[in-house]
Length: 224
Ligand code: ACK
Image (cartoon, rainbow, N blue to C red; front, side, top):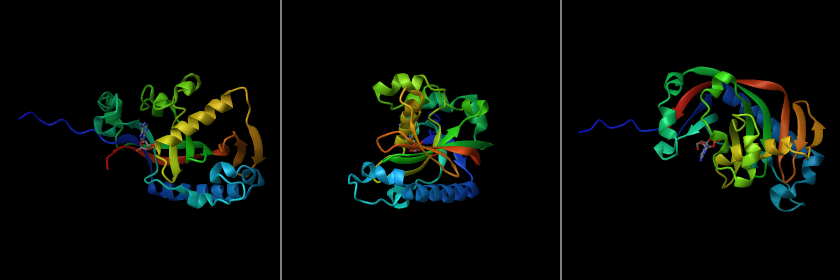
C-alpha cells in the first residue's frame, strides 16, 4: 500500500499563550464597556440594533472564539487553494512550535466582528502566505487591498456577532484600513486612555492603541 500523505490541518497561525489570552480578554472587555457608554457610540447604535432606541450590551453581543490566534494560512484540511504548498515550505515546518511576540496595534468593532489588529515583523511576514490578504475580498475592494502593505489582514478575532463566521474579522479590518487610506478621512471621535477612537461609518469603529500590546504566542497548526 502507498504510504498515506499526512493530513493538512484546518489552519496555521500564532496562538496566544493562555496567560496573554486571559489578559487580552479582560482588557478588551473593558474597552467594549467603555465604548458602550460613549455618547458617540450611542448615536450610531441603530447600526448594531436596527433600532435607535434599543440598547446593546457589547460584551454579550460578541461571542468569543477560542483559542485566540492570528491565522496565517487557512488550509481547510487541504481543500483550500495553496494549502499544500504552504505546508511544504521549509520555514513553515521549521517554525512549528516556536515562540514569538505579536504586536497588537489596534482594535476594530463592527456590527459583525470584534478584533485586534496585529502588526507583523519581517520575520513573521516570512510565514504570511502570498495573496492571503486578498482571500474572500469583494472585487470592488481588491484595488484597495493591493495598495495596503502585505500582512495588513493580520488579526486576532476576539468575538463575532451571532451567526457570523470568524473569517469576517479580516475582511472588516481590511475594509477599515482601505477607508483610512482613502480621501474620506475618519471622524476622530475621542481620545481615550487606551488610544484614539475613530468612527468609519456603517457601525465601524477603530481604536488606534497609544501603546502597542505585546503578546507571547506560538506558531502552530490547528485541527478540530
Ligand atoms: O479569525 P480567523 O482568522 O478567521 O480564524 C479563523 C480560522 O481560520 C479557523 O476558522 C479563519 N478562516 C476561516 N475561513 C477562512 C478563509 N476562507 N480564509 C482565511 N481565513 C479563514 C478564521
